[in-house]
Each structure stands twice: as structure tokens, then as C-alpha cells.
Length: 327
Image (cartoon, rainbow, N blue to C red; front, side, top):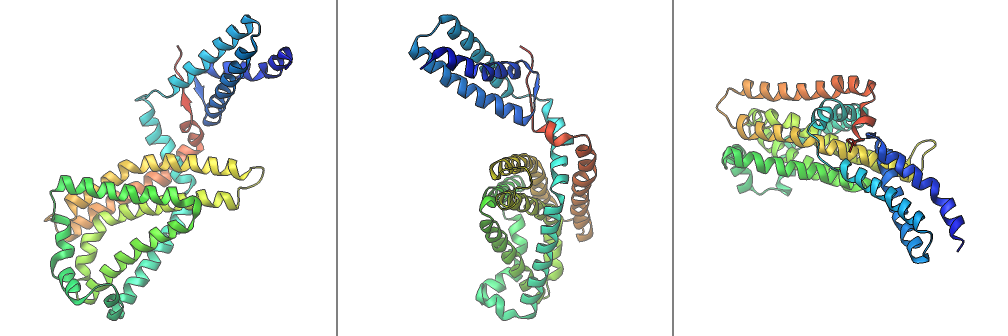
């Protein structure tokens, strides 16, 4: 191997790594490039050491590697100032960018759920395929209402939060395969429709709406967003878009999905608190539903109004980047 040619051929990558390491802020693409260049340079250093080249070359490359490693480690540090930027710019901008996906999916699923609930209400024999007479009697007699007050509110809120977060994460993670997302949505949609159809069919439709609406508006919207984002990731394989490879499209969509998944965590926590404290409370039904509707409207305004303003400032790209403090 011609060592001089080897060094000359790769010196540009080493210089580029050092340039990126000196920057205070890196976009997501630049941060990824820095990591790749660092990994390559580490391999190059290992090769050069085995060939015993000029110690000056070894020392210079080692210095550049140390700078690259220090920059990567600094970028991994936690910065409290990143939280407001994420919540006020990055997350709402990502929600706005994906709005056509989750609004369309939400409307379709709500229409399908309403139709299925009506069908089960109109044809009670359908519910008999899923529940026996005793189970239907228990559901109407108090199991549905009792579910929301079975545990202490703080414990129930944590349980609901965890369950919904897992479901949303599953939808996002399974999106690359597309079909599993529809399975997860279908199972949950069927469960809600069976419960609603049975309660409406037994004259307890108002109870169903009173105990579902306070938390369900926000909770289901989060699930719709997670499912839509997952399907968007899967669609990147099928239609990556012009001037992009499938790998590039998938990487971009997956990064956006991860940002949205992180942002949905506190939103689902709010939905969990509503389900644990507002849904089973002694407040009048109109007050409970009103509180849930206000929370939902606030989130929609956050996603569409604040998201539009954030996207106009280029927040998605900035929020996905890394801030590297000066040494």
C-alpha cells in the first residue's frame, strides 16, 4: 500500500471532520456526517498504525479524532434550554408538517368507528360473537363506569399513560411494514365500537359518551398521529420522492417520527390525567366533556396554528439539529 497516496486520498475527510467539530451548531445531517467521518477516521488511524507511517501523520490524525470525539460527546449532553425550543418550535412544526396524514386518518377512523358502533347497536347479535350475555350485562350494569374508578387516580393515570404511549410507539415503529399499523388500529377500533354499540343498544349511550369524550378526544388524536406518522414512514419506501433514495426518505421520515413520538409523551400524560381525574369525577357531564374538549382544542391549535408559525421559521430543521457548546 502506498501510504502517501492513502493519506492524501483521505486527508479531505479528516479536515472536514475537524471543521464540523469546531462548529457550535450542527444540523441533523451535519451531526450524522460528523459521526460517520469520525468512524472512518478511527479506521484509518488503525490502518496507519499497523503500517508504521510518519509519527507526525499519526499525531495529527489523532488530534483531529480527539476533536471529533469531543464534539460528538458534547452534542450528546443534555441542555435544558433545548426543551422550550423543542416544545415551542420543533414539535409543533413537525405536527403541522404531517397534518394531512393524521387529519385524514383521524377523519376516516372516526367515520369508521361511528359506522361500526351504529351497526352493532342496530344488530345486537353481532356483539354476541364477542361477548356473552353475562359480560354484556356486567358491562351495562357498571363495569364500564367502574373501570375508571377501580384504581387510585395517580396509579390509574400512570397506567393509562403507559398503555397509550406503548400503543402510539407501536404504531410508529410498525409503520415501516404498514400492515401492522392497520391491525393495531383495527383491534382498538373494534373494542371501542363493541362497547359503544352495546351501551347504546341498552339505553346507556349517554354514559358511553360522558365517560369517553373527556379524555378520548385528546387520547385518540394522539393515537391517530402516531399511526399516521408510522404510515408516513412506511410510505417513504414506496414513494421516496424526487431526487431522494429510499434510504434517504426513510431516514428523514424516521427522524421526524422520533421527534413526534417524544413530543406526544407529555400530551398523552395530559390525556391520562383527564382520564384519571376528570372522567370519573362528580362534575356534571357537560363540564367533564367541556374540559376534555378544551384540552383537545388547545392541542389542535398548538399543532396547526403554532405549528404553522414554527414551520415558517424553519423550525423542523433546527429542532432536529444539535447544539455544540464551545470548549
